[in-house]
Amino acid sequence: MNSVLYDVPGPRAKRRNVVYTIGFLAVLGLVAYWVLSAMADKNQLTAEKWSPFVTDSQVWTTYLIPGLIETLKAAALSILIALPLGAVLGIGRLSDHRWVRVPVGAVVEFFRAIPVLLLMMFASAVYAAYTPISSDFRPLYAVVTGLVLYNASVIAEVVRAGVLSLPRGQGDAAVALGMRKGQTMLYVLLPQAVTVMLPALVSQLVVIVKDTALGGAMLGFGELLSQNRQITANYGANTIAAFTVIALIYIALNALLTSLAARLEKRLRQGRKAAAVKDVAPLVNVEMGGAGTGGA
Image (cartoon, rainbow, N blue to C red):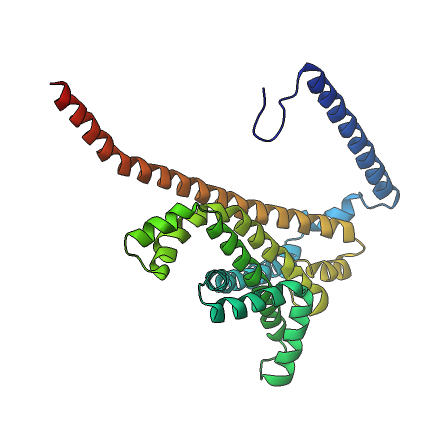
């Protein structure tokens, strides 16, 4: 029996996969044991290295929670700007007018090719030289600018690919009904493409949240990861403990974002199925009524 992507494994292949899995888990366990042993030898597993995160609330109220708030602020601003801007750029790349399609494509390819950190640093330099923005707020502005420019260009490609993945008949049917290109894109193609694009968009949103750490590393932005330096300086050499706690916060935050997106995708798919059933039901009733009349 074959599936769409690969041959279904037989009994021997299943046994071999079980052996591979056991071997991988054994190697992973040995690596974890070696890492924990090395940390124990360096006294990194002692209670005093980890106790500040449990016994001292100031670690959270002074460093971790304010850092998390700054991370969420920069990510939220970037997402709110990058999503509509990326959608506009993606639609522009699909334009039938060359004078729109070519410049928009050049802009998208240009900002996709530049590392996001370089965009942040360039934005910071521009703000420092040509704007009156205070140095207290300049890192936030630079981080948001870099994230918006880079991620809007990536989202534009996601939008373009999502629309192009739809069956060509969708657009042709809208044109046959007399809808203009803009109406077809807005009312027919984009709503259907959202479900296709959602996994890639969520992945990009997770990237935005994580990339805020670049501003903390190079621009002095007080985001979550940069608080590690303050915690280490005030509570001793507990760098690994601080990194571990911060990593767990990032994991929880991104898991929450992914979970919310998965629920939204499920609701969108259910809504489309319900709408399709609602549209088909009258046709089925008419056909059944006609069949019954003919039989009579």
